[in-house]
Amino acid sequence: MKKLYFTLFVSLFAFALVWANDSERIIKPSELPQRAQQFIKRYYSMASVIRAVYDEDIFSKEYEVWIEGGVHLEFAESGDWIDVEAQTQVPDDIVPAPIAIYVSRHHPQSRVVRIERDKHGYEVVLSDHRELKFNNRFKLVEVD
Image 1 (tube, helix red, strand yellow):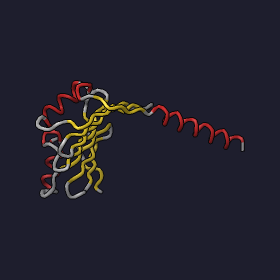
Image 2: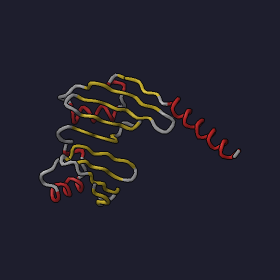
Image 3: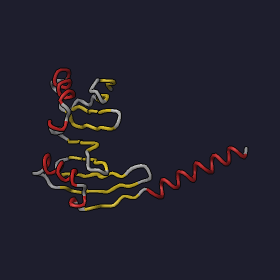
Image 4: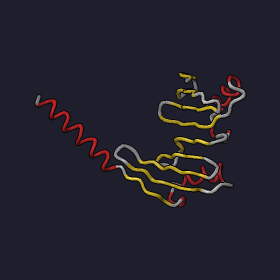
């Protein structure tokens, strides 16, 4: 029984620590990493940044940006993009060529409205609400 209480105590302490260290603050677009600023300038130069947020917790430091026209971007601490979501379509240049080719061949009526990347690969959401997951070698591994 003591082990159970100890485990419960440690779990609650860890949760409280994570919760307490989660800090999010609104920043100016000029406070974004240079790479993030260049990304926004390249792909969304005609739109205004509505909100930019620096989000830091124990495990990660990220930036989130909302741009007029329904665009939501997430950047790593380095300024590399993590997630790009648009109401209409993600810019073609952001989607790696093998993924773009797969989508055009197998889902010609659909557009990429979200792309997310991490150390395991890419997740793509199409305008028809299908979700495609690709590994780092651009091989399709899952369709939802």
